[in-house]
Length: 440
Image (cartoon, rainbow, N blue to C red; front, side, top):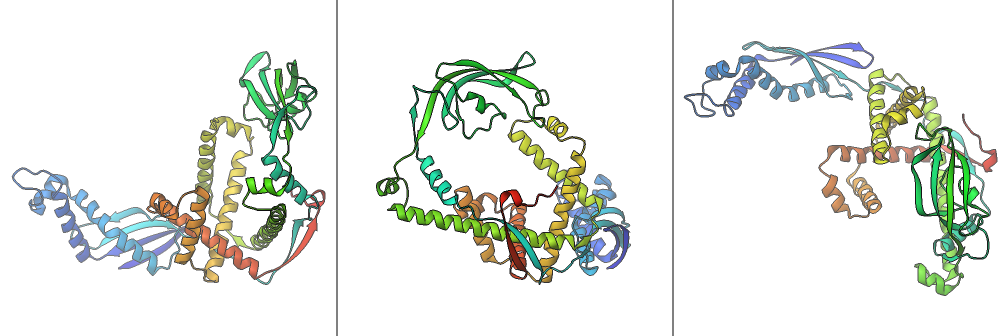
């Protein structure tokens, strides 16, 4: 087989290949025989009509097309292999010449992986910011544990405060019209942990049971409903119940009842271990991110617009699915993102592609491989996350090539990040929250 390679533009390559007439003839005859088995021709049983009769019945072009489709997988793969192409798209046939008794000429185009000029990726010295140790972390965690098991008592003799939970009815209006979905009866709200409109929960503080009153709020400028963005609204409130949280007494008996520990000391030791492990995880993730950012900044790669367009389309599709799950309108969401939405999507797509190309390049240079045990470990992690057995996970998704490819890529990503963490020097710099550098 002869091939001629031509670079069209960027990473788009055109290949013209010649398939020997002898093999094309065999494929043509086989195609005619195959087609004859699925059509009805008067005077012949299926599969028994001579080739000339099949040609008259369905046409030579259809047989050639069938023959070409049987030849292409082998020859396209061989052409890609012979020319050492690292392809990222399926080959697209743009032209072919197929005449019986002659060599077949096929032209196809395919996109190849962009060349990545890696900067230094090992032996780096990187400063990494990490949060300063929180002296109150243990007390917060212990209080959080007690709060999970708290009971609630009705309050009858005082107004509500910002640590209470209240039950109330409300009805909202904006510009004189009822707000769709802005009314409810018997709604329960933790005043200290509210995800309502800013200012809503604060105005429920200081009221008594059976009080009826109005509160005024302003919807955020980035609110998902276009009609309500930045608009003032009034909510009529009727306060039905006030409940105060009562924390349980921390003793061995309580600990035995609600946890896997036998004593308060065991519980406290576990909380301390958890906080320490969380801190270690944060340090490692921050270090991996800082190292990778340093490598990204020193790496150059020309990403074709076609790749960015495909990745942008994928990102948008992901957004659309999330919008549909939340019952939100896609067009309204796009409008809410402003005129820079498309540019931001494109920039995000380019960044994702560059990250992926760098990881792929490093994995090849350091010969990272995905072993069977890696798959088993990852499947076990995922099965645990979904609350099912690993075998059930494989049963549900194991036949999906995209699923297996995704797992393989996750494993490669994790191995590359681990390699970079182990082969670069990290200096940790503790910063308080207010000191942390903010990138705009």
